[in-house]
Length: 303
Image (cartoon, rainbow, N blue to C red; front, side):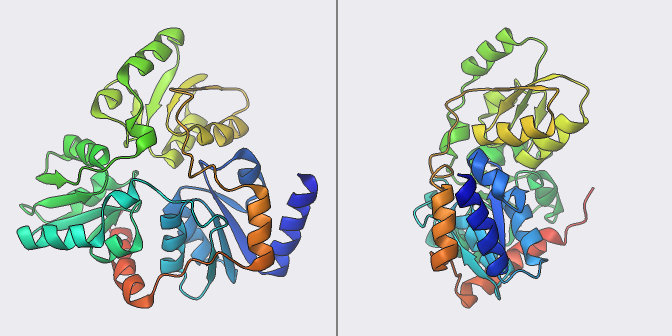
């Protein structure tokens, strides 16, 4: 493993490349990466570097977002089949049909969508800013959120706005059940339960905090609590434990594993850098429209 890691680091320098790893990636991938974090956060940071190549250890829509924000850089996804079932639950055609039914809709799409869907979208959002994005929409205008019903339900609960949503979901987060959370909470009564907004409403009802992955990392670092139950994909436990050695992190369910996020191994990263493929390139006619939806989101004042 050390040999492969050294070779990867050497090739990154040679190719003028930056290696990005999502928080759900395997520990050894996160440890060799230049940057770890949420998908949009990583794409934005990479776009500001002088790197000529982005190696994105995540899933396809993440590599697409990197291509959208860095059209002049080469973007590599080490395993071409690493996809996102939730992103695949909606198509651009579905959004077009929805607009025909109600032309006045404001379409807000989660960044966890494919590029073609982003291109048909008014505004993008993340799990961290969905509430803020929804509130930025003009008064009285109906919002259609895609593709995650649980993020939409959470946003509706927090804003009370007129929100309709697509019936998509993350298999990992939607699979977490309230009964499982109650069991773990009973076993760790002092622990703070932090849930991802992609979880079901009845699971969020049990949470002390509802946060994105970056939000979970920030909360755990700032908190004076010592025990935390983490309601998201188990890959996040690695950076949480690494950044907070004196604290205890318990998975809400050890079965919260995203198979697609675990597809990439160090050998795939090495192959991608050696062969400069598989490349992900969003066609410009799609990228320019998708970029607009992301930029509109970024223009919303924070706070």
